[in-house]
Amino acid sequence: MSAPNPLLSDNVPSNILSLLDRLHEESLNQESIITRADYAAPVIHSNMKDKFIALEQDKCHFMYQIIKSIGGKNIVEAGTSYGVSTIYLALAVAANIKATGGAGIVIGTEHEVEKAAKAKEYWAECGDVVSGVIDLRVGDLRETLKEALPDTIDLLLLDIWTPMALPTLKLVQPNFRAGSVVIADNTIASAAEYKELLDYIRAPGSGFTSLTLPYNKGLEMCVYSPQ
Ligand SMILES: C[S@@+](CC[C@H](N)C(=O)[O-])C[C@H]1O[C@@H](n2cnc3c(N)ncnc32)[C@H](O)[C@@H]1O
Image 1 (cartoon, rainbow, N blue to C red):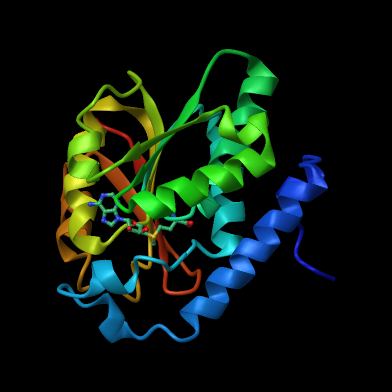
Image 2 (image 1 turned 30 degrees about the vertical axis):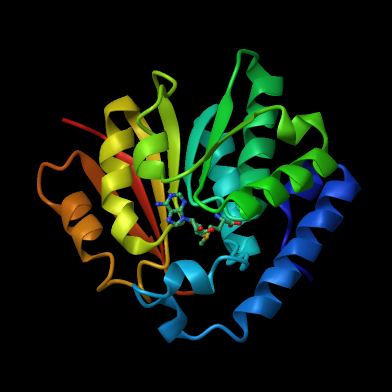
């Protein structure tokens, strides 16, 4: 029996499900020829300029479930690329708005102008349910996230080059509430590169509890629970 897909149970339209399947497949095809050396500091931007490197589908499903369980309506995504994970974030926010009313927004961030433009095309293809709840900030997120954020951020996805992870968390953390969630990708495979972030989160008194989930290459789930 195939693994359950929460989007299917939530009656997400079939054109969106097909688009997601196609984009994940394209991303995996690209990744099959990417090596660790491609992620090295001096070349990473040019090597990844036209690569999806989308969050794997099972992790996206997990994130969708978490956002629904915490009733998340305001999300920040660090690293949007072609906007695949953003579609899941938007669908979860839209589901929460539909369930309990109010407003919500997914703040995406992408450095590459061409990627940002293509992401917007994919979101338009999904329709207003997705495109209508995304605010994409194009440029270096260390600047764009200094612009106004919602008072409360329910979830931060860190799917970004590792040196950006801690600076991003520090920009967004003032807007966390008790129970806000931080998800960081690849925290087992890139534990050394994430050292600063993981030391910060796991330090006694940090206000975070943290768990490494056994997804491919690891997925960190942190809950903000200040004493
Ligand atoms: C792993 S990809 C994101 C994948 C995306 N979350 C998905 O699942 O489809 C990381 C992205 O972060 C972008 N990026 C890297 N440094 C950045 C920065 N300083 N500001 C904004 N975006 C940045 C890269 O261009 C790249 O597209």
